[in-house]
Amino acid sequence: MTTPTLRPATPGDMATVADIWHAAWHTSHPGHVPDGLTAARTLESFHERTPARVADTTVAELDGVLVGFIMIDGDEVEQVFVDPGRHGSGIATLLLDEAERQVAAAGHEVAWLAVAIGNTRARAFYEKRGWTNEGDLPYEVTAAGERFISPCRRYVKRVG
Image (tube, rainbow, N blue to C red):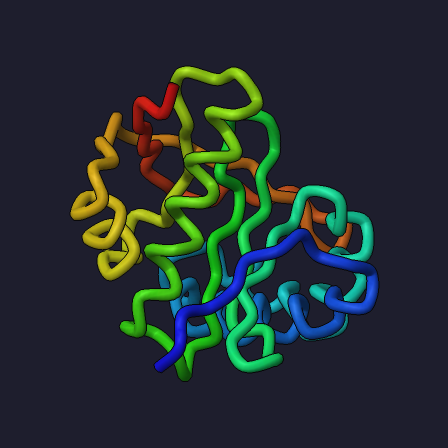
């Protein structure tokens, strides 16, 4: 496998970002978040959400194909997703390293992220990469006009 290229997202990338986000989210979240949230996370809902996020999105491209992305919001690594067919390929590590670099470059000493409590695969990945579990975080999410509280853990890492 060649090494993926990271670059800022463009408006033309966001439909593919939505497709990856939907597929990867539904691989790791059902059963670990409120059922109503899972039902609200339709492919259409991801396509509605992504265009507004182009400015804070970085994509990973492999041989001209988008294979993953990150979204950064201040000191929060808000999204880290890889096409499920490429899980275990090292792309998530590359993306997470870039997310940490971006948070540090923005002047933050510590980055944080939220992980669904039951998403043991993601939690193990972050812990292996040096992130520390700081405990419960009832993460508020709005979807389809409803407010949900998703049971998460807050992870932090010193990046600055």
